[in-house]
Length: 194
Image 1 (cartoon, rainbow, N blue to C red):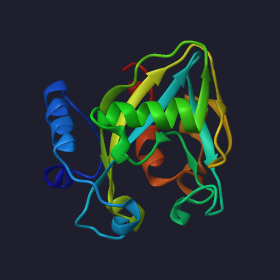
Image 2: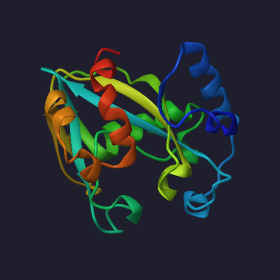
Image 3: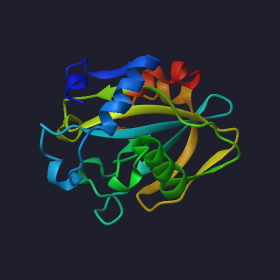
Image 4: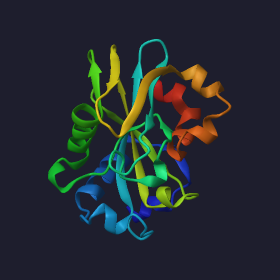
């Protein structure tokens, strides 16, 4: 994954051949406790991060919890986000990324009512301005539902489908939303067509 760290900062769409190479790199990686490497800039942790798009130009948005028991990383307490997902666990193998997405999105964090598409890898995201961002490498996925999304896990205070247009016009996004969401918001229209 170190070769991907040298790419430009922010969100970058991926071609299918690069996506396959990236999945191979992840499969060939090693496991280390996330808490041992959360402040180690030499270990880049891949994080599957899914945007859920709904009918009428909407995307799921939520607010993270603000206590360590419910949400394990104080650097993101109370931040708004448009991406669901999290750390890959050893038990997610052998299809690490797919299993992590299944576990995080449909079994732990939210419940999707109605049909939804299999998450599709759209691109990657890297940011360097905050310590929490420097050690995580975003694998940005898109899924679409014809239904609604409801919060299931205590790590999320509240969540709802919001208008993409409304979100893109919101002048307070920079302060309220976490770094990755802010990097993706300008690309939401294009991502929703993915």
